[in-house]
Amino acid sequence: MKIGLARAFYITQSVVLALKCDPVFLLASDSPLCRCSSHSCDDLVVKKPPDDFDDDINERSIFRTGVRWNAPQQIVRGFGGALTDATLLQYANLSSDLQTELLNGWFSSKGSEFALVRLPIGGTDFSTHAYTLNDDGPDFDLENFLLSEIDLQWRIPVINAAKDVSPHNIGYFASMWSPPVWLKTNGDFNGIGKLRGSPGDIYHQTLARYYRKYVDEMKENGVSIIAITSQNEPTMGLFINSEWNALGWSPKTLRDWLELDLIPEFRNSSTKIWLFDDNRIILRQYINYLMSSESVRNETTGIALHWYWDKIVPASISQNVHKEFPDHELIASEACTSRGVAGRELALSWKHGEDYSLDIIQNFKIGFTAWVDWNFALNMSGGPNWARNHRNAPTLVDVDKNEFYRLPMFYHLAHFSKFFTPGTQIIPSDSSSALFGKRPDGYFTAVAVNSLEISTDLDRVI
Image 1 (cartoon, rainbow, N blue to C red):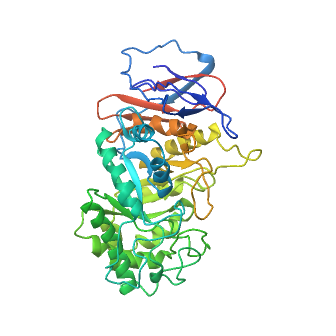
Image 2: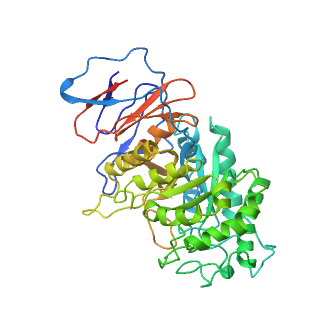
Image 3: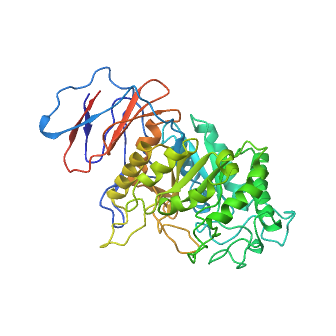
């Protein structure tokens, strides 16, 4: 089998990625971005694989890896991103035809076929202001709980529209950044703040019911939440003075709250609980406490991880946790690159795309089932973000021009989301820069990263 690798990667084996890009260079980009306007927008076109492959391998530029086709491993849940307020505001301010292009690029068979989406419970830093879904309190009965205006006007309609165009059954999981401030020790959305009281008391019971109320309200609006994470980045607000929405949890207190309050609240629910939702640099310290509870071990189903610090923290930490707790699937639940400063880090660098691909490959080779980006789309400044924590995104939107631009990360991520569709079985290989799988349709698929400036032939050895 021959797979040509031009600059970053190219796929043939199950499908081929075909583009009709309107290339533009913006800001400090070292790579052309694909512009989508009312006049043109690229599609990701699937073609059936050829019956035969070119076996004329160039031995001078060969990349060979062993692939164990008969030893399939975990099943892919999916790839995707987060429908944050910032993303939805970009969508809302485009013309209807560009809204359709944006949506199709994320979810349709002509686009990335994203199948897993993260939803915020209330506000995040990627909102125009800090808020929760029950700011009028104290209100321990949650009588003032309301889904946000952006939930009702944009998030739920976009979810319904995605359902109409997607070839997959999209899964939605939810995370909370900050609870209502009347539940917190510091009485504020950000800063250093924990939940008042102790697990099992009215504060902790109310927070558990706040999660359940969100899930029930979304279901009443036609959106089933497959899982909630226990807390977005529990280290933020614990010993880190967070500049944005946060709630700090020590490993012990989080374990006790799960055991006494959150798990009992969801015991009769189809919505699962995923643990941690933070960076692997601190994973072992939390998991040791969390899994010391029999209830937490047996009544939660996943471990969510963010990618920050992955480059300096060995993947063996996640791998060893997975070996120890194999019944908990590993979900990469957040990733993004900084927007960067020209001269120090290119704002729109091709390397950001390669970083996505290499992280995905590394994670799936150690047992992950899903990889979820942060914001699907942001404005040209990497926002809006009320805490001024501007970041990059695979799609940047210029509302004034009624255009949006697909960055290298979009296409890197699409290689995986479109070809490693839900139900694909990961096939082990010897390479750290290639991922192989067997799709539900019976085809084998491969994605490989070539960071060189020359094309390279890929030969697999059975």
